[in-house]
Length: 346
Image (cartoon, rainbow, N blue to C red):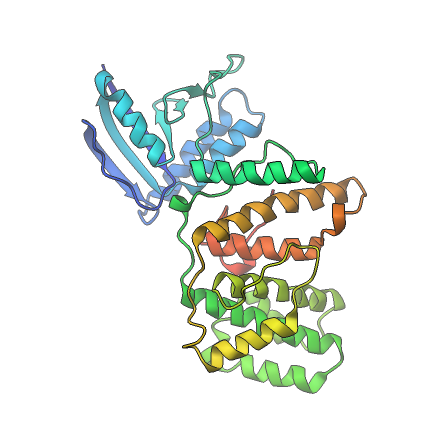
């Protein structure tokens, strides 16, 4: 019996399809019709089993939102096992018209309202992402911290296409200079602030600023809260400097970054780039920090909702800024998002 299957894969590079099949179509995120197609499919997923949103629907929709490839093919009964192995390797969600959603092994979820999902159906996540979550959950349990178990893994290494070193270095520099500007303004150091403003508004640097940064730089009388918000971006500077290998240390978020030390390293990197060539540290280390700060951000949000202090001295502002920088760098739930629109939802 033939099966016409749509596969929504989240990995960056698709491996060869080493199983018998009939190929119908394949497209990636650059295809002009991909975004509209994904929107249509996730709308179907959200409406299955009744309109009420639950964790399963939410994570299936999130899978579709971050899907990088859509493959349509036909397989026969005898080739299902080989196809399933391939579907697991691409972290694929399967869809069979008109409304059947399956995991890579063919187990079904989102049956008609009132019908239970198959017990073995699992939202697909890469193994390394699952293990990363498990390690952090075990560590939190040892510390006595309660974390929502339903929070999913973040990204697997095969799913990530980091921003380029050049783009990251430019973003780091924009964050550093605008945060420095805000710091001078908070201290009432008008001359220093004016010098930075003039420096940033020259044509060669102005284009590296986001709309929010440009609006702040050109505002002669920003609010105190705006200045504080920009000063906190020093913590994002620290993240990107660490990711680029300029800063070796990345302390647990119970202390603020050593700003003077970070700036000294950055100045040395600009003066002698041969000593500090911008090169990303191993992706596994970056994803470890992404998963950690994603879960820590949930903890501090929960504490705030419960009108409690974060446990063991966790610093909410540090965690928020780090989480934003890591989401921007990796594209976690923010594929192709500009800095101003990078979200940190949990």
